[in-house]
Image (cartoon, rainbow, N blue to C red; front, side):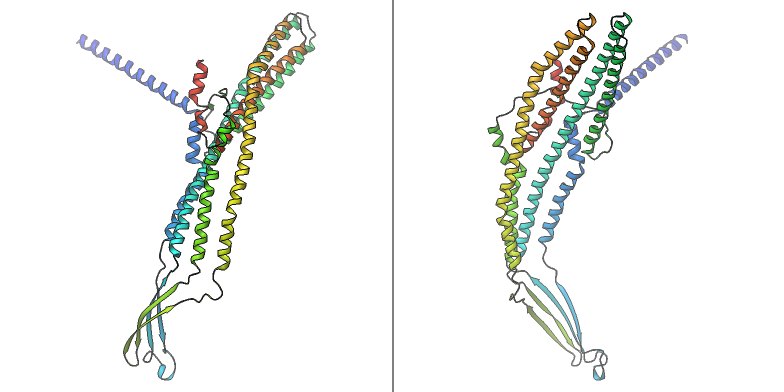
Length: 441
């Protein structure tokens, strides 16, 4: 009996240990999942925007609208029923319906000149144009998401930089306090150091507020008023050589912004054909049955109705369609000029930002860091004054801020160049994977 009790106790103990470990593992998995859900990559942001962006959703519904219009354009006109009663409910011998004539007649509009085919053709081309418009808006949305993502990423780095500045300010404040206590400098320097530290803290609050604004702006791209993430994950420091402008120029005609103009021209040609088809008059065929109550006789009726195109031959609509078709070439040329102008501006910004970021990284920041380290160390031994330390500190962190701005300008210009050259999705350039590889190096 005692052995049984001991055995059962051991089983119970192992069971408790098993469920405790399982529960702990579940808690760890839950914490890991929660932690990962609070971090957002650029691919996740792009996917959410493509799924939930309100403007993009409206453009996708426009395709369904065009499909419905094509369906409607292909339907034949409905027949119409006419019932006519003559010589009834009058006076004298025409009282009642004994001398009445009752006619029941069906009429059908027959479209001639290929109107229905032209109408369907114009609607189908409108569907293709809706596809191009959607593709263009899709590129616009992706561009907006990528640019805002970069702004959030830059703001995160600036918050981190400002927090480093506060740490440095605290260290400097401690060094000044030591020198004041030792009687090596005037007490006023401790007050000045405290003022400088306070300005660092205020600047940090301002940057954090800007970060929150950019987070809201990013979440608004998928229709959310409040961000559902805490931070974004990416490699802002990934900089690649700028592709030659000659290669990029060849890709501009492949963008949906320009390729859509061929469909615009086709649509306007189809509209012209539709308006020209309206010069041919339609006919209405009629046929029915007539009852003559006075003689109790029956008769068949039939007829045809043809409009006479003496005055209105659809001249105005045809002329309008011709002029719309003629101006397509100039509109396309104007769109190409604007796109190429914007491309050249974006490419120049890209080249400048790339050069600026490279110089800041390889020359300016190392020199500013070396200067600050030397002056900060020399201050402890009385070789440099209070203002020298502040000046070197301000120069170093202004340079680092300029570097972050240059990196962000580089990526934003690259995003814009990709948009206008039908480039790859920007998420492949600043992915979480590249950020991890950068850290490992």
